[in-house]
Picture 1 (tube, one colour):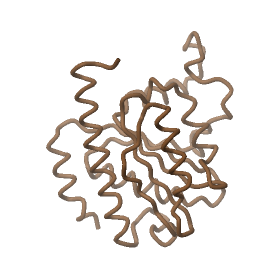
Picture 2 (cartoon, rainbow, N blue to C red):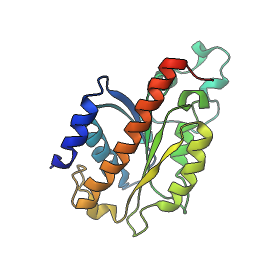
Picture 3 (cartoon, one colour):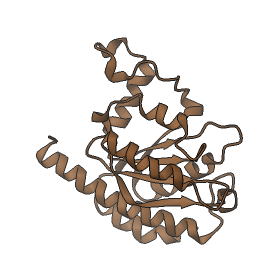
Picture 4 (cartoon, rainbow, N blue to C red):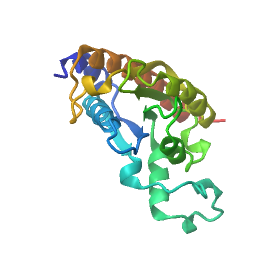
Length: 210
């Protein structure tokens, strides 16, 4: 099933150390289809030399944001789960944002989750946008707004957007792809994300950040 990724996986494996990726799943709505997309993306990333941490607002129970972690003068006073989550965000080399489209916009659970952490956690690293919908537009209106949101966080999104129209026909409940678009689309996104993630990591290690 993942034969289409064999060359990509082999090329990325030769680069040595795995890239660390945080995958943000943006929906917590009842009957959400995003879990299929997250499972698919996690599978593909892990098969192409990535270490993946999934941030799911249903599982992690992010509260409505009252105090972001970077607003604590003494981080020892912050909730332990928030500090542990921030470590994963800060140590990541890249981010994959899986987003639905709520009222033609970004799901509130997604921005609420990501806003718990300051821009310094995300800065000088790339992000990839994966959007979806049960309709024919694939969540592209939320993706356009995510461009600005991710840019302000400091993790500029790569040019390719992986949009998935009629997502219920594209993936089964376990995240298994049901058409060729899934394989081709994810391949293009990961190729761009990896190139940028390796380049940025190498430069951070060589010269630091401003």
